[in-house]
Image (cartoon, rainbow, N blue to C red; front, side, top):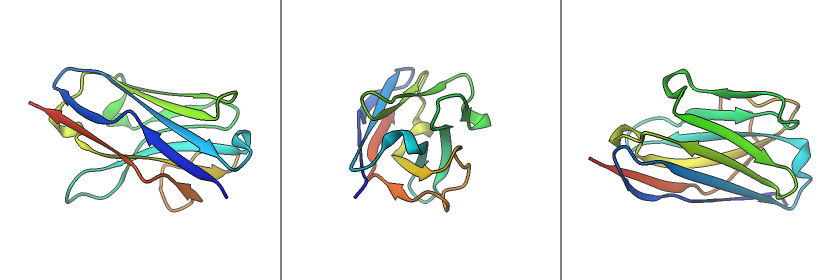
Length: 124
């Protein structure tokens, strides 16, 4: 069974940077394209960034471009999310997700596996 475990969340201050990681186990990591999503209190879950299983393609939500970078290490079965210049609006639970497909999806419905999430709180 495929399992995803996020790490790296916590309490940071405005302007700080953060690196989230997602470790995938129980499956062949290179089969999966990966996505990062986030959900703030009272809001719907939204796409943050995605990366294809080959690492050839990446995408970042338009509102986050320039502040967010996604990468993966297929040797370590991990996908990472680097976020810079954090603001309180970035406060959310961040989830990673996997789909057995050549590319990631912007919508969350097609992803097959999800982690439990990691909380990121940005203080002002």
